[in-house]
Amino acid sequence: MYLKDKNYNPFLDRVLLLVDVAMVLLVIANLSMLAMQVNFENAATRSLIQNYLPQLHALYLPVFENFIFIDGVFVAVFLTELSLRWMIAIYNRTYHKWFFYPFVNWYEVLGCIPIGSFRVLRIFRVVAIIVRLNRMKLIDIRQWYVYKVFRKYLGILTEEVSDRVVVNVIEGVQKEVATGIPLTGRIIQEVVMPRKEVLVNFISHRVQLVTQKQYEENMEELRESIREAVYDAIQQNENVQMLEAVPLVGKAASSALQESVYEITFETIHNIFQRFTTDENRVVIEKIADGVIDALLMKEEDKALQKTFTDMVVHALDLVKEQVEVKQWMGDEKRT
Image (spheres, rainbow, N blue to C red):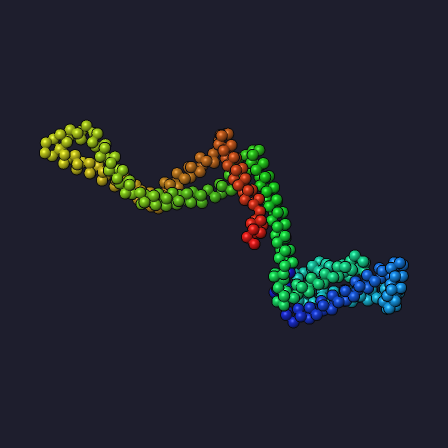
């Protein structure tokens, strides 16, 4: 809606700044006149002014008698200036639509209405001057104490309101989950199932990575475990014991048999792990992962499983609520 940064004109901004200053001076004069008019309309106050400030009384008396006309002149000036600004905004395409100007500058429009309470809005032109000076980099309102205080409490208000809204939404979801499984069923059907293939691929890839990493890190321990297991099994085998009883060659044959069985066993397991991490065997992992996901999503009337799933979701939402309810502004205040 607002396109001032795109069509910013430094020269025009300076001219409008001078106009703003002139308008503020006129507003101050107009409001001062209004204040005097209120005093003059009160007979007691007017009498006091006449007795103690006769020169002021004589100076303002013509204004008092022609107040409506003079105030009309002020209003005419304000309306003319407002119309010129509106036309400039239309010419420069300051706003997305031509009729946005009176809505954005509502205080100027209402200030032109010659009614007491609306006249005060004319002083808002001071805000326009401050904004223009900041945009011209003649001042930096971000360094002002008032601005910092305003931003601080605005941030606190925004955080409190948004946190309350988020907590209410989460509590509503918790009630839906706790009172039944329709929401859970929708999550499974509309969220999980359309992404099932992605989940299967992700799980398969992770399983391969973890398997390869763990096997490489523990290969030596696995080798020693296989060696010990093969040695114990052979030593307890009666046929091997009979072979060891053969004179001269029994021990050597038993040792050779033990080493051969160990090598065959380890090579078999090693090849299984190596093939397990290749793309050719990934299809098997994907089928297993697909079956696991289907098993988890089966619509069986397992009340214990449903309750566990519900409790998990509610607990997870409780953790989110706790994080949302953390007062971030308190931590910022302590740091400062």
